[in-house]
Image (cartoon, rainbow, N blue to C red; front, side, top):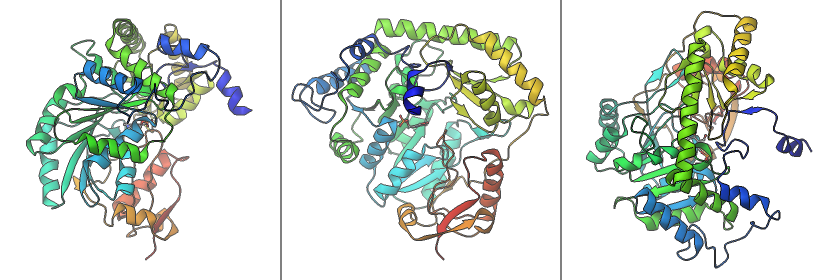
Amino acid sequence: MRLFNFLSSDRSENLFLPAHGRGNALPKKIKKLLKLKPGIWDLPELFEIGGPLISEGAIAESQKSSAYQAGVDRCWYGVNGATGLLQSSLLALARPGQAVLMPRNIHKSCVQACLFGGLIPLLFDVPYLTDRGHASVFDSKWLKRVLKKAKELKEDIAAVVLVNPTYQGYSADMESLIKEIHAHSLPVLVDEAHGAYFISQIRPDLPKSAISYGADLVVHSLHKSAPGLVQSAVLWSQGEKVDPFKINRSIELLQTSSPSSLLLASCESSIKELFESQGLKKLKSRIEEAELLKDFLINKKVPLLENSDPLRIILHTSRFGLSGIEVDKRFISNGIIGELAEPGTLTFCLGLSSHNKLGKRFVGIWNEILTTLGKQKSCFFKKPPFRIVSKPCKPCSYSWGSDFETVNLQNAIGRISVEMVCPYPPGIPLLIPGEILDEARVDWLIEQKCFWPEQISDFIRVLLD
Ligand SMILES: Cc1ncc(COP(=O)(O)O)c(C=O)c1O
């Protein structure tokens, strides 16, 4: 009952994902479909329809047309979010025993792929913004240092994964990063879950998709950064470095044998919106509206942080000594639901629907929070104790599957974790199976526990000695 009640009411201001904002920005064709007889669109892989892995039928045709519009060789629609397609990509890129170089702010789905694919995650450190407590982007100089260190570990590196933009909308100079990786003859997979609409190249001052810089594989979450239904996603591929047969095979391994035709239709229509005039017009006006809103908030002294995505607003709560998680609760009780509450910030996703009366209401709530919770001194966060590149002390999959005991975090020094510690959102692991809990990591996790009291436990499961 509770679920149905929630699903059928729409009383709050939705500044969370999916980006279609409770249906407001769904493509016209999907809205029309959903108005037909309930369930008429719920079909299996009939001959006429086909599926993401079938070479004939409507889906095959649609995928070809989308790939053509994006200027790549092929694409696959996905019905298990960016998660499913990132995992399939990794299994296509590396075989068991090979290593994949990934940033510390990687989404947990990629670590999970290493876990069940027997891959070695080589995690590299990324710049950390101590004034707000989350990761930033890096440049090619940073990456050069990472690649040099990674080579010293003497693992058989099969690929590099990059995350761009970040959840909060920071974007790196992808051209130079991809060039650097290709100079080492390695393929690159870009997790562009939060940057699908960059493919539209709607304005020269906005970031471009990694596709335009020659990334071999790019994954978009179509519900996070395009007007797709939840779970819709797409994987784009170009060039000769990754064999499409291997991608097909890996998708087949993870995909349901009954992909939803509604979700596949949503993949098609949300991608079309990113290329065709009506969708582009809508996107352009949303971006302009978002920029006006940001200007208004900044003029009213709301502490926003700069980023590269106009559709994401980062409220800098730690600037006034406040936790984004506490501030989020206050916004929710005032009817505004944000997306990503972190210890030092609260990120709102404007998505693709209109929020034209939001400014004054937002300022009112923020000022009330400041008055009641009190303006305090800015707080700063300690940099995580990560090495520039590190490899789990024991294989990730072995640790995950091994017998364990549960110990108090304080007593875990020197032990090896069998679990992932990962507040969600953002879904970025603070610790992965197989990593050793040295003193610095334990201290840092205990500190993180204070920041994420409901998400990090006092206890941790570790390998039996
Ligand atoms: C950077 C990043 N990649 C991938 C994903 C997974 O996306 P999806 O929910 O479409 O599976 C997320 C989800 O939060 C994410 O933040």
